[in-house]
Length: 409
Image (cartoon, rainbow, N blue to C red):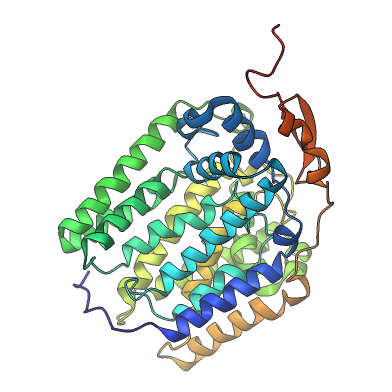
């Protein structure tokens, strides 16, 4: 990878305007997450409960095989600064602010990527069920991009930037398994530059990856999934539908086509997209790294989700596993807007336009039931056992009561 050019001076006004637009679009897409916030899944049953039961020790307690540092920190701070009625607002607000920080990081002059306005807007506009948007439990799917940005970041110019880079990598690396996923790309970057800063970033990310990996090895696998024979057609069909047919052709295309159609469409489109990145072009180093990132994260998430065991693809099951790959596919298509052959450029523009226009009717996510948290959270305030409904539908917190307030057995 060639040495980075000098950092341009002054803000990238178009990129920062895109940050503002993306922030508004995100809020408009899921307004109820900010206006009538509720806890989502492990927000309450894991992070809230374990924070009360374990205190600071919860920060080092793995869940699902790895550490989730950001939700643990938010749960701890909320419990010590706010009344319990405000905890859902704090959880969702923190998820929203971290997402905006991600947009700002990409808009920074230090991140050396082209077409930044479109890349930033992709986070808010790319199709999906919305389960990763403004949700503390699923914040790791956004925070992982901080690791990917490090692959394209310019060297720090001050001790503050250097310390900030390493601290950010440490926190994000201990918030999900993605240090192991994107670590090879940081190793690739260091191999090309041999700089001390890139080596330090690799060491911090590698330490986080080893930590998460050791914890993951101690987690029992899903025996039922492991015993199920691998079904390659279903696996490829889900990848094709989630990354190609649904984003660019709409949900009806997914429901109306057979699995082999999605598998073939995905294989042909993604194969052509990956092969096209190998052509001689000034953006080839960037495209190539994005393709490698897409391949690694898609394989890792497909292994984790075991979509090949699904009976059918409803577009709802496990959608979080395909959010990062979907954004990366969108990015790779965006980077072809100005491709040399006019046909390629117009095809890319058409796909992006279709990917936005076809999903406009579904842009605002429907509001779920309001379980009126403020009216039912008094048991937590008093520290007594209770079952409290939260999102998604059918989920609830089995609150065991606060230690020290329970009667002796």
